[in-house]
Image (cartoon, rainbow, N blue to C red):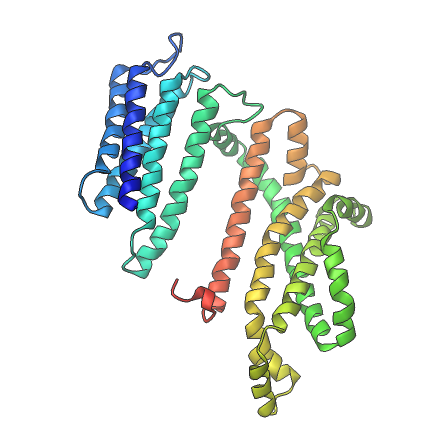
Length: 375
């Protein structure tokens, strides 16, 4: 099946090259900076080499290396040639982009089938595969927006967003400091800690557990656009009101998950602890909390994204003249869409790093759990 898929992708890639060759040139005749014949020939040669590798009986690592070089070098040449020629791409240009993408797809598929021989190699593959996948999202985004001439105000290409990021570092740094380092971190820590403490109390006191959990489910359904303006009225326009929104959003997921986790330990284990004359707190610390750790970390990971969303949305309803939400709301009114996308990209990057840190802490803490074994 793998051989059939590889051969089919190779044949399809060659067919795209042949059709593109018939439909040359790549750009419209009035393009300001047309592709040279040497560049066009090099692109076709690279894609053809990558396609032919699918039929050769060579090692997987060698095939991956050739596919990696040919696919990305061809895509780099195609994107470099469209810069300054926005909206001038012809069908042959998009056919070659599609052929390069097929090579990139084949490269990812080959990487996914490699059996890692060491832990370091496993970690490298876990980073390389999503990196290539993400790179191709950006490549296709860049090629389509520039090749089709999509107006920047509707969807700017990644290169324009990167230029805005590098040209607005002081503004972005101030926004991150206001939103992330103040509102998000404080609200996240307080909300998660409060939810955890109240969950312990609810586990200890039956009427709290029966009364709080239904309220927790109700509060989790509250719309943030309703909570945020109320918190701004209560705590003012600075970061404290945004932190309050984050606390509300992170408190109940931690409460519900921790209570569920504390009930995850088996009855046999609890009976064994009682046979050793263990009290409530000994059983809690030595049995029930360790068993609840996957649930607690699940809440921490959920809250890592909720906190960021809550703080940014809360800034729409009143903030000093700084902050990621403030910047998004004001710049979209000025039609500075590239700045809006820059803020979105920075927020996505910080959120991913935040989530990754929590996930790494989970692996280090719950290494004994079946979900973390053998990986």
